[in-house]
Length: 102
Image 1 (cartoon, helix red, strand yellow):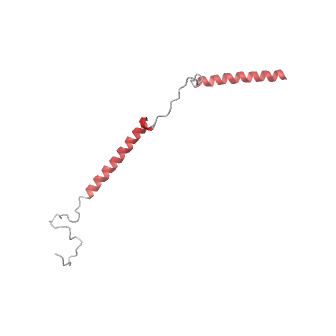
Image 2: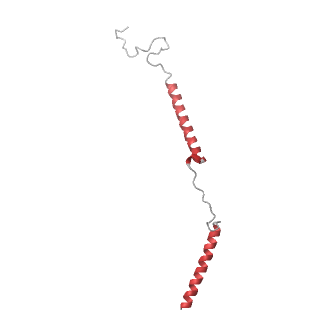
Image 3: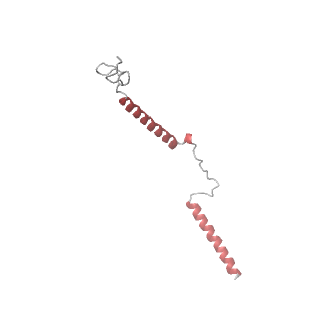
């Protein structure tokens, strides 16, 4: 009985070693002693991060320019104190026709 248990233990260790070697070779490693792990790039060196920032800034700039353009187009209407097309001033636009002011 003791011999059978010892034989089973030896077979188990051999099978474990063979499986471990096969799995390690599949990973392409050589034991991990000479493997260099690449550290993550800091954000200021990461091209994907920098491209994302550039894209976001360009989108914000386009939105701002579009908003300014729309504001300027809407702002083309006469403002208080500006001349109306008929030559009259818009200062008295709030005054009623019955207002005694000149």
